[in-house]
Length: 422
Image (cartoon, rainbow, N blue to C red; front, side):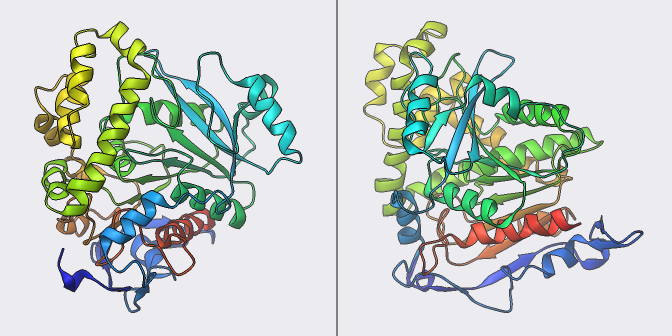
């Protein structure tokens, strides 16, 4: 990343198939359609004829990214969550954090939170509590009449519903929509979710997403599902959409957005090691988070896989500084791969990108210090379901504007609003 990548006025490029090959989408007007390309051209947030103005104090990708990793002001992006534990078929669990209205009494919210906290589970992040039994029964009540969209959010490797970026996104959707439900799927072990089997989350955890969405569709068949993935969540999303496209038939998801997706994991592994920010700040930070998941769930994982997690392995975990070392020691072995790079080759979303048959908005910056910047431009000019928005500034999950808000959130929100209007 050189000095030419510094600044605060970013260029925007859009990569899609020619208009003649664009897919047609139904319009509210009977018998009329609009192409995917035409829909993208109506987005005011994404305008290649104009510059994208970002915060001038965050004048390169590293600063944008570091701001994102540290922006956790408790009085900004104030969102309240009700948590539901979702049980997978293999015995594992994730947590679903549903956005709820601000409680009338914070004291009552805290009291219910203490009463509903499962035994042995860690205390949740601020403004988050478990639902009561009655609330869960009401939440999961089947309905054919309900046709309000559900927005699903997949977080990144070190994240969850508590992240500033995700809270900003949830707040924008909650403010600008009527009756939409917003839910964050916190992966196994993430955001203070317990690990109950030897299985951890990976970029190939597509069945984890599929089980949740299938459950939604079975209860609410007429609700559109919109889904956004950030970073590793974007990779899981792209792999999931590719698998669904290969199956054919009606898709579970109406429209999707992938932000800062690592399209080639091997490229990304080398890329993060090539900069000071990646090698000495981002890499060790992410590795520390992954190690913490294993440490916090040592008893559960070691019970199922004592050959995988034991005292000797825990000693090795204390010495590693990069995510590929963690993946080589832990992830690949829980997923039946011989080494980290075999896992990376199989899990790279570029393998599935041409199979995607769900309208997908892709946002990547070429000054991203965390993931590879060789973007799938030709694939996006081949698959009519894709729109790649390429910027030269923004970093990894950054795009911070003058107000400390995230431009990618505004772009995704407007994109989904257009689909809701169709």
